[in-house]
Structure formats: C-alpha cells, structure tokens
Length: 117
Image 1 (cartoon, rainbow, N blue to C red):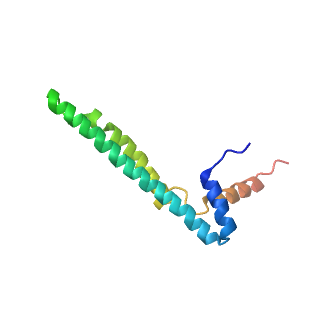
Image 2: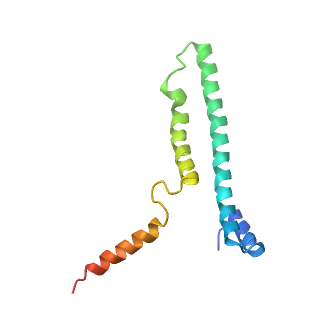
Image 3: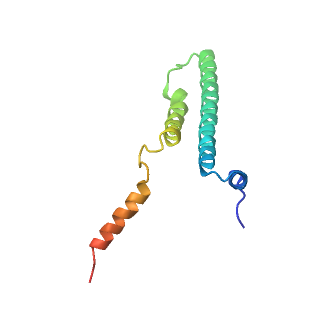
C-alpha cells in the first residue's frame, strides 16, 4: 500500500490540469521556498522564546546570561537552517547541475576502460 502524500496528490492534480512542465517545476520550487520561510519563522520564534526564558531565569537568580547553554540551540539549529537555505536558494552549491548524469557517464567510461579479459 502506497503512503499518502499531500504534495504528491497536489502535483498529480497540477499535471492533470496544467500539463506545462515549467509550471510544475515552478510550483515545486515555490513549495521549497515556502517551506524554508516557515522553517525560518519557527527558528526565530522558538529561539527568541528560549533566550527570553533564559534571560528571565538568570536575571532573577543572579546567574550569568552569557553562557554556552543559552545560545547552543540557536547555533546548532542555525547551521541546519543555513544548510536548508543553501539547498533551496543555491541548489548547485555542492554537486552542481546534472552532477549525477556526469558522474554516471564518468563511471561508465572508467568501467569501459577496465576490461578484465
């Protein structure tokens, strides 16, 4: 039994109603950009809340606010957010366009050169 995916259903509806492949590609890109912005908003809200809670607790207890535990979540999550942003807005960052196809062709060429007869 196939797992239900809301986005797969939406893409199938798009293909049925609008067979233009450029539109479908733009729709997929829009969904990825939207997901990044949602991720960014959640990151900001959660980390502001965490830092505000740490500030209020440390202010009443007289402890140091500027410590590693206060900003660790924001730092590690921020690294993940930067990776997400690079994958959305700069998809050619690591592998480039058509990397898979070029790699397959290179491996096939290397395999053809190494004949074990």
